[in-house]
Length: 148
Image: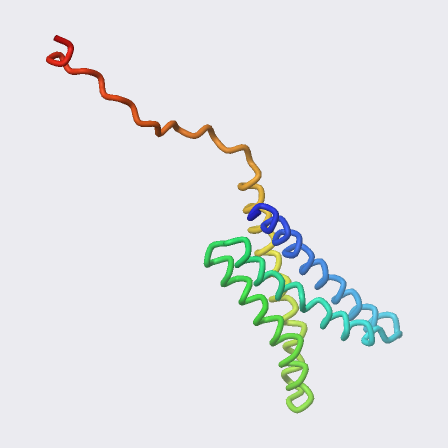
């Protein structure tokens, strides 16, 4: 059961950096084609928010180690700051808007770190386990006195 959840965790971990690339692509289209794609960029940015949330959930369902849980929570926190808090505050403090693309880079780096760790986790779990040692109780050999 945990193996399947960990595979889902890995898939989700790779989908998020891919989605960030799509987001950057939409922003680039708006900046360099003289057409506005901000109408796609904004809602898509909110749609992909379920990916880090799902990642946090899967760390618990897959019984991942605390460092993986901390990274997933960090990713979700940075996403929240990026997508909601900065967007809200940048209307009153425009300088904060400049942090939006910077945090996109932070999100991408963090998401890739998680994705590579997830791939290693799944690969380690899928490998053929080494033969287990036998831990059966053996009866002790009779002593010399017991033989006579």
